[in-house]
Image (cartoon, rainbow, N blue to C red; front, side, top):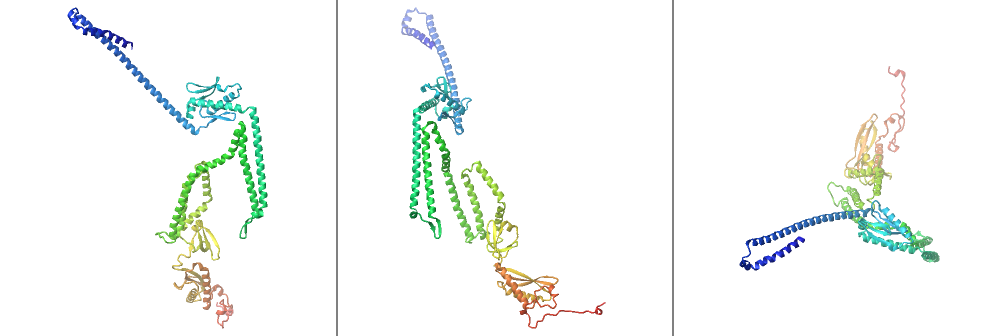
Length: 619
């Protein structure tokens, strides 16, 4: 700046000389006294000043450029610092946000009062240690009888704001503390200082002897009122029972239907008495719930006791109520899934019932498959519904719930292996179609009519009216004889075998057996009965009579009638149904044919005795 001023002064000194020479050129010329060198000197002087001024201006311009470059450099560094500060602040905010989801606050206490909570650490001190140190210093201030509460001051240092009392630093507020509470360090320090002052002042006021005596009197008064109310409640309960007893015969009657009495009048009286006692105890508990907080709130050091006492009882109920309230959206989801699946299953059932009633026919799908298939589809739909509902069940994502589910699954798989085998066998039997309800079948040694066929067992009713339950796995692993499959269309062949000696002509035996079958009830004439000779043994021939019937469930009666008719037909023809072994050694004995079938002149054969002389023997 000095050089610029100097240049301007020089310019102002030279400029009048130039102007003067320009204003009066005639005088210079006319005088003839001014020589050329003076003019040249003057011109050189002017140019010199101009050069000096240009140099000064150039020097100033160069300095100005240097200053601009310095300013730009400083501004760039300032921007870098600001960017670093903003990144650091963002990192701190992110750290605070992460800590808020997991960090635990530790209370700063003065006796039983909680002043505030500490969430962040300071240097090597963790939050718990900071809270304990601050509490200890506040207690020292409270116990100092000469403490002036207004002497608490706040001072700001480089990175922290401190709360002082004299030379004691009560606590320091860090930048993390302020960020945690979304406040500045100074504002948070002022708030904490105000809390400390007010708490110390209040507790000192609360602990003087006059207030202690007054609070003791209030406690006695509250307890007296509580006892009086309990006495009144007991009186009301006793008067109520006496009044009801006096009106018992008018108000209370036996509650009965026809000959059965549900509740007698005495039982009704006992029930009413029990309800009155419940009401009394409920009223006592309500009074206790109201009185205890009042009593405990009178003294400062017991104010937290009522909360702690009732939290033990109330918190579980509160958690249950809150859990129920929070669970309502999931409950509505479960109800929606259930009702949608319920009506969809009804539609599927209607579809299969139409197949079962043969109103709807599907090629290759038998009508008796309809309901078993529906049961399988219903089971799968319910399983799918359970899969959809499972995430909405309370505690479904907990480790305990998963462990119990696995445990129950293992128990079910180990304890129900035979049941599962029967279920699989029942499914296979359904689609094998070896029999249906009402069929006469034989499974192993058991014969009967099928009365039930479910997933696990098959039930038969025997001809003796006995019910037999057979596991489906046993049915599947054994042989099943179905007598009813072709009975209606082609007829069931019943058969019985008779052994007759070679002395009876086979034609006579055939005629006798066919006649016996024809006379048997429920035996068909077409196709006609026929006889098969199944074997030619050493002493007899085996004749098997075969006849058709459409009454598979009446086999026992048909066989009984057939056997009677065989006896009658053989007796009429003089054919003994007797073992030839016996007939060969029965000389002199009566025939086994009943007497009414014998002729009037029948005489039992005599014993054959033959005396052979020694000389008659052939040598």
